[in-house]
Image (cartoon, rainbow, N blue to C red):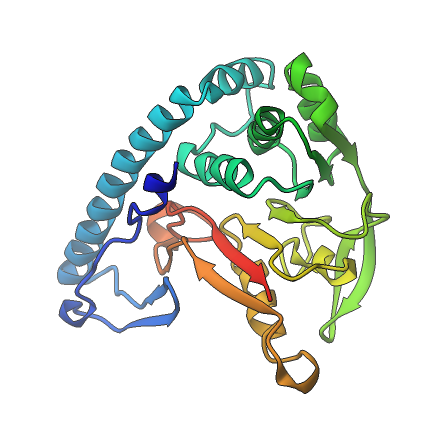
Length: 278
């Protein structure tokens, strides 16, 4: 499994050749400012898009084969077959990072915000370890019930899936929402894959504010700029200016593709952002 972590997900763009302004805000967050009426701009965008698609297809294949060798693909098929027709199709690379992390670091308590295929895969990893428990919270009663029902029988003792309503709170000067009554006070690993409310400013990271996170705990953020912004802000707001988090990004988000992809996040094919508590 360690070999997979050496695979590079990030395309190496020569940003100096772009015919329009590009800024790389941090790590692998890239902002584009194209004029879609300009043929040269459209040509450059299509080249970036083809590169991203080719890299992602290759890595999806590697990840799925790795999951198959671990016996996880059977769980994926069983879980997906029990879900409603409008459920999301799994991203094999994202699932592999979560699975490999749990298998290698052996967390005892895993907390997930937003249930789904990741719930089944993380429960599978805990079952393979023979220890640990996953608590998965969902802001939708429908999806919480669907996830709990779709979990293979042998994994249910390793995962608890519950609906939690939103609680309005003030964090970092913003009125926002977190899940009410978290099931645990702390966790060894957290996966931020959903928010308590669609108007949550930090896309689900608000919930970290009320947990007692131990050093060396890990947080994965699924394609959520607002959540990553929360951790970037917290870097400079800790007492004595000592950082609380270290960001290790596996994610590429390209702002400026909105008109092409009709996506609220832009192009976000490139996996999760890993945040470590220090």
